[in-house]
Image (cartoon, rainbow, N blue to C red; front, side, top):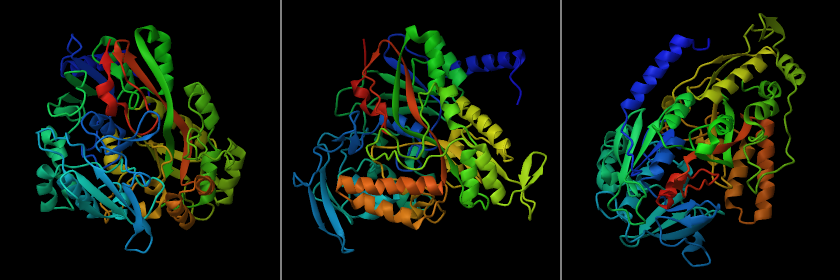
Length: 559
Protein backbone atom coordinates (compact mmCIF):
# COMPACT_ATOMS: atom_id res chain seq x y z
CA UNK A 1 0.00 0.00 0.00
CA UNK A 2 1.34 3.42 -0.93
CA UNK A 3 0.74 6.64 1.00
CA UNK A 4 -1.73 9.06 -0.58
CA UNK A 5 -0.08 11.66 -2.83
CA UNK A 6 -1.06 15.36 -3.10
CA UNK A 7 -3.67 14.75 -5.83
CA UNK A 8 -5.25 11.94 -3.84
CA UNK A 9 -5.39 14.10 -0.71
CA UNK A 10 -7.08 16.89 -2.68
CA UNK A 11 -9.71 14.51 -4.00
CA UNK A 12 -10.27 13.15 -0.51
CA UNK A 13 -10.70 16.65 0.88
CA UNK A 14 -13.23 17.50 -1.83
CA UNK A 15 -15.12 14.28 -1.18
CA UNK A 16 -15.16 15.06 2.52
CA UNK A 17 -16.69 18.49 1.93
CA UNK A 18 -19.40 16.98 -0.27
CA UNK A 19 -20.04 14.30 2.36
CA UNK A 20 -20.48 16.87 5.12
CA UNK A 21 -22.70 19.06 2.95
CA UNK A 22 -25.12 16.16 2.40
CA UNK A 23 -25.71 15.73 6.13
CA UNK A 24 -28.24 17.58 8.32
CA UNK A 25 -27.19 21.16 9.10
CA UNK A 26 -26.05 21.85 12.64
CA UNK A 27 -28.11 24.32 14.63
CA UNK A 28 -26.17 27.36 15.83
CA UNK A 29 -28.22 27.79 19.00
CA UNK A 30 -27.17 24.45 20.49
CA UNK A 31 -30.63 22.97 20.20
CA UNK A 32 -28.81 20.28 18.25
CA UNK A 33 -25.91 18.11 19.36
CA UNK A 34 -23.92 16.45 16.58
CA UNK A 35 -21.86 13.42 17.52
CA UNK A 36 -19.26 11.65 15.42
CA UNK A 37 -18.84 7.86 15.54
CA UNK A 38 -16.95 5.47 13.30
CA UNK A 39 -19.51 2.71 12.65
CA UNK A 40 -23.08 2.29 11.44
CA UNK A 41 -25.18 -0.49 13.02
CA UNK A 42 -25.71 -3.70 11.07
CA UNK A 43 -29.26 -3.70 12.47
CA UNK A 44 -31.34 -1.54 14.83
CA UNK A 45 -33.02 -4.52 16.44
CA UNK A 46 -31.96 -4.50 20.12
CA UNK A 47 -31.69 -8.31 20.36
CA UNK A 48 -30.00 -9.21 17.06
CA UNK A 49 -26.21 -8.94 16.59
CA UNK A 50 -23.82 -7.44 19.11
CA UNK A 51 -22.37 -4.10 18.07
CA UNK A 52 -21.31 -1.07 20.08
CA UNK A 53 -22.61 1.32 17.41
CA UNK A 54 -26.11 -0.05 17.84
CA UNK A 55 -25.96 -0.01 21.64
CA UNK A 56 -24.79 3.61 21.61
CA UNK A 57 -27.53 4.88 19.30
CA UNK A 58 -30.29 2.83 20.93
CA UNK A 59 -29.14 4.17 24.31
CA UNK A 60 -30.81 7.46 23.35
CA UNK A 61 -34.07 5.72 22.46
CA UNK A 62 -34.59 2.85 24.90
CA UNK A 63 -34.13 1.85 28.53
CA UNK A 64 -33.30 -1.65 29.82
CA UNK A 65 -35.12 -3.12 32.79
CA UNK A 66 -31.87 -3.25 34.78
CA UNK A 67 -28.39 -1.93 34.10
CA UNK A 68 -25.01 -1.33 35.71
CA UNK A 69 -24.58 2.38 36.36
CA UNK A 70 -21.44 4.53 36.36
CA UNK A 71 -20.55 3.17 39.81
CA UNK A 72 -20.86 -0.42 38.54
CA UNK A 73 -23.95 -0.95 40.66
CA UNK A 74 -27.02 -2.77 39.36
CA UNK A 75 -30.03 -0.42 39.21
CA UNK A 76 -33.55 -0.36 37.80
CA UNK A 77 -34.38 1.71 34.74
CA UNK A 78 -37.59 0.36 33.22
CA UNK A 79 -38.61 -1.41 36.43
CA UNK A 80 -39.83 0.26 39.61
CA UNK A 81 -37.81 -1.72 42.17
CA UNK A 82 -34.84 -4.05 41.93
CA UNK A 83 -35.97 -7.51 43.06
CA UNK A 84 -33.89 -9.27 45.71
CA UNK A 85 -34.30 -12.34 47.85
CA UNK A 86 -34.19 -10.01 50.87
CA UNK A 87 -37.13 -7.84 49.75
CA UNK A 88 -39.20 -10.87 48.74
CA UNK A 89 -39.44 -10.05 45.05
CA UNK A 90 -37.05 -12.91 44.23
CA UNK A 91 -38.03 -16.30 45.61
CA UNK A 92 -35.88 -19.45 45.28
CA UNK A 93 -37.86 -22.47 44.07
CA UNK A 94 -37.39 -25.90 42.56
CA UNK A 95 -37.36 -25.78 38.78
CA UNK A 96 -38.96 -28.48 36.58
CA UNK A 97 -35.48 -29.91 35.97
CA UNK A 98 -35.15 -30.58 39.70
CA UNK A 99 -32.47 -27.94 40.18
CA UNK A 100 -32.68 -24.91 42.43
CA UNK A 101 -34.30 -22.15 40.42
CA UNK A 102 -35.73 -18.75 41.23
CA UNK A 103 -38.85 -16.69 40.50
CA UNK A 104 -38.10 -12.99 40.06
CA UNK A 105 -40.87 -10.40 39.92
CA UNK A 106 -40.59 -7.03 38.19
CA UNK A 107 -43.02 -4.16 37.76
CA UNK A 108 -42.82 -1.94 34.68
CA UNK A 109 -42.84 1.79 35.39
CA UNK A 110 -46.50 2.92 35.28
CA UNK A 111 -45.62 5.91 33.08
CA UNK A 112 -43.63 3.95 30.49
CA UNK A 113 -44.99 4.36 26.96
CA UNK A 114 -43.82 3.57 23.47
CA UNK A 115 -43.17 6.53 21.20
CA UNK A 116 -46.69 6.36 19.75
CA UNK A 117 -48.25 6.67 23.21
CA UNK A 118 -49.06 2.97 23.63
CA UNK A 119 -48.31 1.83 27.19
CA UNK A 120 -45.41 -0.56 27.69
CA UNK A 121 -47.06 -3.65 29.18
CA UNK A 122 -46.58 -7.32 29.91
CA UNK A 123 -47.88 -8.03 26.39
CA UNK A 124 -44.52 -6.75 25.19
CA UNK A 125 -42.76 -8.84 27.84
CA UNK A 126 -44.54 -12.03 26.78
CA UNK A 127 -43.98 -11.36 23.08
CA UNK A 128 -40.27 -10.67 23.50
CA UNK A 129 -39.84 -13.78 25.64
CA UNK A 130 -41.78 -15.92 23.14
CA UNK A 131 -39.62 -14.59 20.34
CA UNK A 132 -36.40 -15.35 22.21
CA UNK A 133 -37.59 -18.86 23.09
CA UNK A 134 -38.13 -19.79 19.45
CA UNK A 135 -34.48 -20.74 19.03
CA UNK A 136 -33.96 -20.03 15.34
CA UNK A 137 -34.45 -16.28 15.14
CA UNK A 138 -30.92 -15.13 16.01
CA UNK A 139 -32.23 -13.44 19.17
CA UNK A 140 -29.64 -12.89 21.91
CA UNK A 141 -28.72 -13.89 24.53
CA UNK A 142 -29.44 -17.58 23.98
CA UNK A 143 -28.90 -18.64 27.60
CA UNK A 144 -31.25 -16.07 29.08
CA UNK A 145 -34.16 -17.28 26.99
CA UNK A 146 -33.28 -20.93 27.57
CA UNK A 147 -33.10 -20.50 31.35
CA UNK A 148 -36.24 -18.31 31.58
CA UNK A 149 -38.57 -21.26 31.06
CA UNK A 150 -41.76 -19.45 32.09
CA UNK A 151 -43.00 -15.87 32.32
CA UNK A 152 -46.21 -15.04 34.19
CA UNK A 153 -48.07 -11.81 33.53
CA UNK A 154 -49.63 -10.91 36.88
CA UNK A 155 -51.26 -7.80 35.43
CA UNK A 156 -50.51 -5.26 32.69
CA UNK A 157 -47.40 -4.01 34.48
CA UNK A 158 -46.16 -6.83 36.72
CA UNK A 159 -44.58 -10.09 35.64
CA UNK A 160 -42.59 -12.95 37.12
CA UNK A 161 -39.76 -14.73 35.34
CA UNK A 162 -39.07 -18.32 36.39
CA UNK A 163 -35.45 -19.33 35.85
CA UNK A 164 -34.32 -22.94 35.92
CA UNK A 165 -31.22 -22.04 37.94
CA UNK A 166 -30.35 -19.69 40.78
CA UNK A 167 -27.43 -17.57 39.61
CA UNK A 168 -25.37 -15.01 41.52
CA UNK A 169 -26.78 -12.29 39.22
CA UNK A 170 -30.37 -13.60 39.30
CA UNK A 171 -31.96 -10.14 39.21
CA UNK A 172 -29.86 -8.67 36.36
CA UNK A 173 -32.04 -8.83 33.23
CA UNK A 174 -30.03 -6.14 31.45
CA UNK A 175 -30.21 -7.98 28.12
CA UNK A 176 -33.98 -8.53 28.16
CA UNK A 177 -34.69 -5.74 25.68
CA UNK A 178 -38.37 -5.31 24.95
CA UNK A 179 -39.80 -5.37 21.44
CA UNK A 180 -43.25 -3.77 20.89
CA UNK A 181 -45.82 -6.50 20.34
CA UNK A 182 -48.26 -4.15 18.62
CA UNK A 183 -45.65 -3.41 15.92
CA UNK A 184 -43.42 -6.42 15.38
CA UNK A 185 -45.53 -9.44 16.37
CA UNK A 186 -47.06 -9.54 12.89
CA UNK A 187 -43.57 -9.75 11.34
CA UNK A 188 -42.40 -12.45 13.70
CA UNK A 189 -45.52 -14.61 13.51
CA UNK A 190 -45.54 -14.51 9.71
CA UNK A 191 -42.07 -16.05 9.40
CA UNK A 192 -40.09 -16.58 12.64
CA UNK A 193 -37.00 -18.04 10.98
CA UNK A 194 -36.61 -15.07 8.60
CA UNK A 195 -37.84 -12.53 11.15
CA UNK A 196 -34.38 -10.99 11.51
CA UNK A 197 -34.62 -9.87 7.87
CA UNK A 198 -38.15 -8.48 8.22
CA UNK A 199 -38.20 -6.79 11.62
CA UNK A 200 -39.70 -3.31 11.76
CA UNK A 201 -36.49 -2.07 13.37
CA UNK A 202 -34.88 -2.32 9.94
CA UNK A 203 -37.82 -2.00 7.56
CA UNK A 204 -39.46 0.89 9.50
CA UNK A 205 -36.56 2.26 11.52
CA UNK A 206 -38.23 5.65 11.98
CA UNK A 207 -41.46 4.16 13.36
CA UNK A 208 -41.87 6.04 16.64
CA UNK A 209 -43.60 3.04 18.23
CA UNK A 210 -40.29 1.13 18.35
CA UNK A 211 -38.76 3.37 21.02
CA UNK A 212 -39.46 4.51 24.54
CA UNK A 213 -36.42 6.55 25.59
CA UNK A 214 -35.85 10.32 25.68
CA UNK A 215 -35.38 10.36 21.89
CA UNK A 216 -36.89 8.79 18.78
CA UNK A 217 -35.08 7.92 15.56
CA UNK A 218 -36.65 10.18 12.97
CA UNK A 219 -34.28 9.88 10.00
CA UNK A 220 -31.54 7.55 8.84
CA UNK A 221 -29.15 7.40 5.93
CA UNK A 222 -27.52 3.99 5.85
CA UNK A 223 -23.81 4.28 6.50
CA UNK A 224 -24.00 8.07 6.92
CA UNK A 225 -26.11 9.39 9.80
CA UNK A 226 -28.96 8.89 12.26
CA UNK A 227 -31.20 11.76 13.41
CA UNK A 228 -32.93 11.59 16.80
CA UNK A 229 -35.57 13.98 18.14
CA UNK A 230 -37.26 14.32 21.52
CA UNK A 231 -39.87 11.74 22.41
CA UNK A 232 -43.10 13.50 23.51
CA UNK A 233 -44.14 10.38 25.45
CA UNK A 234 -40.90 10.01 27.40
CA UNK A 235 -41.65 9.73 31.10
CA UNK A 236 -38.49 11.25 32.56
CA UNK A 237 -36.50 14.43 32.46
CA UNK A 238 -36.60 15.84 28.90
CA UNK A 239 -33.58 15.37 26.71
CA UNK A 240 -31.36 18.47 26.76
CA UNK A 241 -31.34 18.88 22.97
CA UNK A 242 -34.19 19.22 20.52
CA UNK A 243 -32.26 17.08 18.10
CA UNK A 244 -29.25 14.77 18.23
CA UNK A 245 -27.47 13.80 15.02
CA UNK A 246 -25.08 10.88 15.02
CA UNK A 247 -22.78 11.09 11.99
CA UNK A 248 -20.92 8.00 10.87
CA UNK A 249 -17.40 8.84 9.75
CA UNK A 250 -15.37 5.60 9.49
CA UNK A 251 -12.07 7.31 8.75
CA UNK A 252 -10.63 8.79 11.94
CA UNK A 253 -8.67 11.48 10.06
CA UNK A 254 -11.96 12.66 8.56
CA UNK A 255 -13.51 12.42 12.02
CA UNK A 256 -10.94 14.86 13.36
CA UNK A 257 -11.39 17.18 10.37
CA UNK A 258 -15.16 17.27 10.98
CA UNK A 259 -14.63 18.12 14.64
CA UNK A 260 -12.21 20.94 13.95
CA UNK A 261 -14.43 22.37 11.20
CA UNK A 262 -17.49 22.37 13.46
CA UNK A 263 -19.44 19.81 11.46
CA UNK A 264 -19.64 17.69 14.61
CA UNK A 265 -19.60 18.85 18.24
CA UNK A 266 -18.07 15.82 19.89
CA UNK A 267 -16.54 12.41 19.27
CA UNK A 268 -18.07 9.50 21.09
CA UNK A 269 -15.76 7.70 23.49
CA UNK A 270 -17.51 4.45 22.75
CA UNK A 271 -16.73 4.59 19.02
CA UNK A 272 -14.35 7.36 18.12
CA UNK A 273 -10.67 8.08 18.64
CA UNK A 274 -8.30 5.49 19.96
CA UNK A 275 -6.14 6.59 22.88
CA UNK A 276 -3.10 7.29 20.72
CA UNK A 277 -5.16 9.49 18.40
CA UNK A 278 -6.71 11.30 21.36
CA UNK A 279 -3.29 11.96 22.91
CA UNK A 280 -2.00 13.50 19.68
CA UNK A 281 -5.20 15.50 19.30
CA UNK A 282 -4.91 16.76 22.87
CA UNK A 283 -1.38 18.01 22.25
CA UNK A 284 -2.56 20.08 19.29
CA UNK A 285 -6.09 21.14 20.27
CA UNK A 286 -6.59 20.25 23.93
CA UNK A 287 -7.38 23.80 25.03
CA UNK A 288 -10.45 23.96 22.78
CA UNK A 289 -12.08 20.74 24.02
CA UNK A 290 -12.72 18.74 27.15
CA UNK A 291 -11.02 15.36 26.88
CA UNK A 292 -11.71 12.42 29.20
CA UNK A 293 -9.87 9.09 29.28
CA UNK A 294 -11.79 6.22 30.83
CA UNK A 295 -10.10 2.84 31.36
CA UNK A 296 -12.64 0.07 31.08
CA UNK A 297 -13.70 -3.47 30.33
CA UNK A 298 -12.87 -3.22 26.63
CA UNK A 299 -10.89 -6.19 25.44
CA UNK A 300 -9.08 -5.98 22.10
CA UNK A 301 -8.22 -9.46 20.88
CA UNK A 302 -7.86 -11.77 17.89
CA UNK A 303 -10.23 -14.70 17.45
CA UNK A 304 -8.56 -17.82 16.05
CA UNK A 305 -10.95 -19.95 14.01
CA UNK A 306 -10.74 -23.39 15.58
CA UNK A 307 -12.11 -25.04 12.43
CA UNK A 308 -8.96 -24.08 10.59
CA UNK A 309 -6.77 -27.24 10.66
CA UNK A 310 -3.63 -25.19 11.32
CA UNK A 311 -5.20 -23.28 14.21
CA UNK A 312 -6.46 -26.50 15.80
CA UNK A 313 -2.81 -27.14 16.67
CA UNK A 314 -2.17 -25.57 20.07
CA UNK A 315 1.54 -25.25 19.36
CA UNK A 316 0.73 -23.01 16.39
CA UNK A 317 -1.57 -20.87 18.54
CA UNK A 318 1.16 -20.52 21.17
CA UNK A 319 3.70 -19.70 18.48
CA UNK A 320 1.51 -16.88 17.16
CA UNK A 321 1.36 -15.14 20.53
CA UNK A 322 5.06 -15.63 21.35
CA UNK A 323 5.96 -14.08 18.00
CA UNK A 324 4.32 -10.70 18.70
CA UNK A 325 5.58 -7.90 20.96
CA UNK A 326 2.42 -6.69 22.68
CA UNK A 327 4.35 -4.65 25.28
CA UNK A 328 6.02 -2.61 22.53
CA UNK A 329 2.65 -2.03 20.83
CA UNK A 330 1.18 -0.78 24.11
CA UNK A 331 4.10 1.56 24.83
CA UNK A 332 4.80 2.87 21.35
CA UNK A 333 1.26 3.22 20.04
CA UNK A 334 -0.69 3.99 23.22
CA UNK A 335 1.82 5.59 25.56
CA UNK A 336 1.31 2.73 28.01
CA UNK A 337 -2.29 3.78 28.65
CA UNK A 338 -3.67 0.53 27.24
CA UNK A 339 -2.07 -2.35 29.18
CA UNK A 340 -1.34 -5.73 27.63
CA UNK A 341 -4.13 -8.23 28.21
CA UNK A 342 -3.00 -11.62 29.46
CA UNK A 343 -6.51 -13.07 29.47
CA UNK A 344 -10.03 -11.86 28.80
CA UNK A 345 -10.49 -10.63 32.40
CA UNK A 346 -9.53 -7.01 33.09
CA UNK A 347 -7.50 -6.15 36.23
CA UNK A 348 -10.26 -3.62 37.04
CA UNK A 349 -12.66 -6.52 37.60
CA UNK A 350 -12.63 -8.13 41.04
CA UNK A 351 -12.45 -11.65 39.54
CA UNK A 352 -9.11 -10.94 37.83
CA UNK A 353 -6.39 -13.49 38.70
CA UNK A 354 -2.87 -12.09 38.46
CA UNK A 355 -1.07 -15.41 38.81
CA UNK A 356 -2.14 -17.13 35.59
CA UNK A 357 0.47 -17.98 32.92
CA UNK A 358 1.64 -15.09 30.75
CA UNK A 359 3.14 -15.10 27.25
CA UNK A 360 6.23 -13.00 26.63
CA UNK A 361 7.63 -11.84 23.32
CA UNK A 362 9.90 -14.73 22.41
CA UNK A 363 10.40 -15.25 18.65
CA UNK A 364 12.91 -18.04 19.33
CA UNK A 365 10.27 -19.97 21.29
CA UNK A 366 7.73 -19.24 18.54
CA UNK A 367 10.01 -20.72 15.91
CA UNK A 368 10.66 -23.82 18.06
CA UNK A 369 6.91 -24.42 18.31
CA UNK A 370 6.46 -23.92 14.57
CA UNK A 371 9.18 -26.48 13.82
CA UNK A 372 7.67 -28.84 16.41
CA UNK A 373 4.37 -28.62 14.49
CA UNK A 374 6.18 -29.89 11.38
CA UNK A 375 6.80 -26.63 9.51
CA UNK A 376 10.49 -27.12 8.93
CA UNK A 377 10.84 -26.08 5.27
CA UNK A 378 11.48 -22.41 4.50
CA UNK A 379 10.42 -21.31 1.02
CA UNK A 380 10.75 -17.60 0.14
CA UNK A 381 10.55 -16.64 3.80
CA UNK A 382 7.41 -18.72 4.54
CA UNK A 383 7.39 -21.90 6.61
CA UNK A 384 5.97 -24.97 4.85
CA UNK A 385 5.04 -28.36 6.33
CA UNK A 386 7.77 -30.96 5.89
CA UNK A 387 5.34 -33.62 4.60
CA UNK A 388 2.38 -31.90 2.92
CA UNK A 389 4.21 -28.81 1.74
CA UNK A 390 1.34 -26.66 3.07
CA UNK A 391 2.37 -23.05 3.81
CA UNK A 392 1.88 -21.59 7.27
CA UNK A 393 -0.52 -18.96 6.01
CA UNK A 394 -3.59 -17.23 7.46
CA UNK A 395 -6.13 -14.60 6.47
CA UNK A 396 -6.30 -11.72 8.98
CA UNK A 397 -9.45 -9.56 9.14
CA UNK A 398 -10.69 -6.52 11.05
CA UNK A 399 -12.85 -3.43 10.53
CA UNK A 400 -11.78 -1.36 7.52
CA UNK A 401 -11.11 2.32 8.16
CA UNK A 402 -9.94 1.90 11.76
CA UNK A 403 -6.52 3.49 11.44
CA UNK A 404 -5.10 2.08 14.65
CA UNK A 405 -6.36 -1.45 14.01
CA UNK A 406 -4.91 -1.40 10.54
CA UNK A 407 -1.61 -0.16 11.97
CA UNK A 408 -1.59 -2.90 14.61
CA UNK A 409 -2.39 -5.40 11.86
CA UNK A 410 0.65 -4.32 9.87
CA UNK A 411 2.91 -4.54 12.94
CA UNK A 412 1.66 -8.03 13.75
CA UNK A 413 1.95 -9.09 10.12
CA UNK A 414 5.60 -8.01 10.12
CA UNK A 415 6.40 -9.76 13.39
CA UNK A 416 4.79 -13.00 12.24
CA UNK A 417 6.66 -12.77 8.95
CA UNK A 418 9.90 -12.75 10.94
CA UNK A 419 9.19 -16.33 12.09
CA UNK A 420 7.94 -17.52 8.72
CA UNK A 421 4.17 -17.04 9.17
CA UNK A 422 2.50 -15.56 6.09
CA UNK A 423 -0.48 -13.38 7.07
CA UNK A 424 -2.75 -11.90 4.38
CA UNK A 425 -4.79 -8.86 5.42
CA UNK A 426 -8.40 -8.63 4.27
CA UNK A 427 -10.58 -6.03 5.95
CA UNK A 428 -14.27 -5.15 5.63
CA UNK A 429 -16.66 -2.32 6.63
CA UNK A 430 -17.83 -2.75 10.22
CA UNK A 431 -21.46 -3.48 9.29
CA UNK A 432 -20.31 -6.36 7.06
CA UNK A 433 -17.59 -7.60 9.40
CA UNK A 434 -19.93 -7.74 12.41
CA UNK A 435 -23.19 -8.31 10.57
CA UNK A 436 -22.01 -11.35 8.59
CA UNK A 437 -18.34 -12.30 8.67
CA UNK A 438 -17.82 -12.67 12.40
CA UNK A 439 -21.41 -13.44 13.34
CA UNK A 440 -21.64 -16.28 10.83
CA UNK A 441 -18.02 -17.39 11.31
CA UNK A 442 -17.07 -16.67 7.72
CA UNK A 443 -13.51 -15.64 8.62
CA UNK A 444 -11.09 -18.47 7.88
CA UNK A 445 -8.20 -17.53 10.13
CA UNK A 446 -7.83 -14.49 12.38
CA UNK A 447 -10.40 -11.80 13.27
CA UNK A 448 -9.46 -8.76 15.37
CA UNK A 449 -12.05 -6.71 17.26
CA UNK A 450 -13.06 -5.85 20.84
CA UNK A 451 -15.51 -7.18 23.39
CA UNK A 452 -17.08 -4.68 25.77
CA UNK A 453 -18.48 -6.37 28.88
CA UNK A 454 -20.25 -5.72 32.16
CA UNK A 455 -18.57 -6.25 35.55
CA UNK A 456 -18.08 -9.96 36.31
CA UNK A 457 -19.61 -10.97 33.01
CA UNK A 458 -19.64 -14.75 32.75
CA UNK A 459 -18.34 -15.56 29.24
CA UNK A 460 -20.99 -18.15 28.43
CA UNK A 461 -21.88 -16.57 25.11
CA UNK A 462 -18.27 -16.27 23.96
CA UNK A 463 -16.67 -19.45 25.33
CA UNK A 464 -19.33 -22.10 25.97
CA UNK A 465 -19.48 -24.74 23.25
CA UNK A 466 -23.29 -24.54 23.16
CA UNK A 467 -22.98 -20.96 21.90
CA UNK A 468 -21.05 -21.53 18.71
CA UNK A 469 -23.05 -19.73 15.98
CA UNK A 470 -24.66 -22.03 13.44
CA UNK A 471 -27.36 -21.73 10.83
CA UNK A 472 -29.50 -24.00 13.02
CA UNK A 473 -29.50 -21.52 15.92
CA UNK A 474 -29.95 -18.52 13.64
CA UNK A 475 -26.30 -17.52 14.15
CA UNK A 476 -27.26 -16.43 17.65
CA UNK A 477 -24.16 -17.61 19.51
CA UNK A 478 -21.09 -15.43 20.12
CA UNK A 479 -18.45 -18.14 20.43
CA UNK A 480 -16.96 -17.04 17.13
CA UNK A 481 -13.68 -18.99 17.39
CA UNK A 482 -15.71 -22.21 17.72
CA UNK A 483 -14.00 -23.08 21.02
CA UNK A 484 -14.93 -26.46 22.52
CA UNK A 485 -13.66 -27.43 25.97
CA UNK A 486 -15.61 -29.62 28.38
CA UNK A 487 -13.94 -28.22 31.52
CA UNK A 488 -14.57 -24.65 30.38
CA UNK A 489 -18.25 -25.48 29.82
CA UNK A 490 -18.46 -26.96 33.31
CA UNK A 491 -16.71 -23.98 34.92
CA UNK A 492 -19.09 -21.54 33.26
CA UNK A 493 -22.05 -23.55 34.52
CA UNK A 494 -20.62 -23.63 38.05
CA UNK A 495 -19.64 -19.96 38.21
CA UNK A 496 -23.14 -18.86 37.26
CA UNK A 497 -24.78 -20.67 40.17
CA UNK A 498 -22.07 -20.13 42.82
CA UNK A 499 -23.31 -17.52 45.30
CA UNK A 500 -20.25 -17.64 47.58
CA UNK A 501 -17.76 -15.04 46.30
CA UNK A 502 -14.50 -16.67 47.55
CA UNK A 503 -15.51 -19.98 45.96
CA UNK A 504 -16.52 -18.19 42.78
CA UNK A 505 -13.14 -16.48 42.68
CA UNK A 506 -11.37 -19.87 42.65
CA UNK A 507 -13.53 -20.97 39.73
CA UNK A 508 -12.76 -17.74 37.88
CA UNK A 509 -9.04 -18.32 38.34
CA UNK A 510 -9.29 -21.78 36.82
CA UNK A 511 -11.32 -20.36 33.91
CA UNK A 512 -8.54 -17.87 33.18
CA UNK A 513 -5.91 -20.62 33.37
CA UNK A 514 -7.73 -22.71 30.76
CA UNK A 515 -8.26 -19.64 28.58
CA UNK A 516 -4.58 -18.74 28.40
CA UNK A 517 -3.44 -22.35 28.08
CA UNK A 518 -5.83 -23.37 25.30
CA UNK A 519 -5.63 -19.90 23.73
CA UNK A 520 -8.66 -19.86 21.39
CA UNK A 521 -8.09 -16.10 21.30
CA UNK A 522 -4.94 -13.98 21.29
CA UNK A 523 -5.34 -11.30 23.99
CA UNK A 524 -3.91 -7.97 22.85
CA UNK A 525 -4.70 -5.14 25.26
CA UNK A 526 -7.41 -3.53 27.35
CA UNK A 527 -8.61 -0.34 25.77
CA UNK A 528 -9.40 2.98 27.33
CA UNK A 529 -12.12 5.22 25.90
CA UNK A 530 -11.28 8.78 24.89
CA UNK A 531 -14.18 11.26 24.97
CA UNK A 532 -13.62 14.46 22.98
CA UNK A 533 -16.29 16.98 23.97
CA UNK A 534 -16.98 20.68 23.64
CA UNK A 535 -16.36 22.63 26.82
CA UNK A 536 -20.00 23.73 26.90
CA UNK A 537 -21.33 20.16 27.17
CA UNK A 538 -21.89 18.83 30.69
CA UNK A 539 -23.11 15.62 32.33
CA UNK A 540 -21.47 13.02 30.09
CA UNK A 541 -20.17 10.39 32.53
CA UNK A 542 -18.35 7.35 31.08
CA UNK A 543 -19.11 4.01 32.70
CA UNK A 544 -16.03 1.95 31.84
CA UNK A 545 -18.20 -1.01 30.91
CA UNK A 546 -20.55 -2.11 28.14
CA UNK A 547 -23.43 0.24 28.95
CA UNK A 548 -22.98 3.50 27.02
CA UNK A 549 -23.17 7.10 28.19
CA UNK A 550 -26.22 7.61 25.97
CA UNK A 551 -28.37 5.72 28.50
CA UNK A 552 -28.10 8.79 30.72
CA UNK A 553 -28.52 11.45 28.02
CA UNK A 554 -31.23 13.22 30.04
CA UNK A 555 -28.47 14.22 32.50
CA UNK A 556 -26.42 15.93 29.79
CA UNK A 557 -26.63 19.69 29.54
CA UNK A 558 -25.26 22.97 28.20
CA UNK A 559 -23.41 25.56 30.22
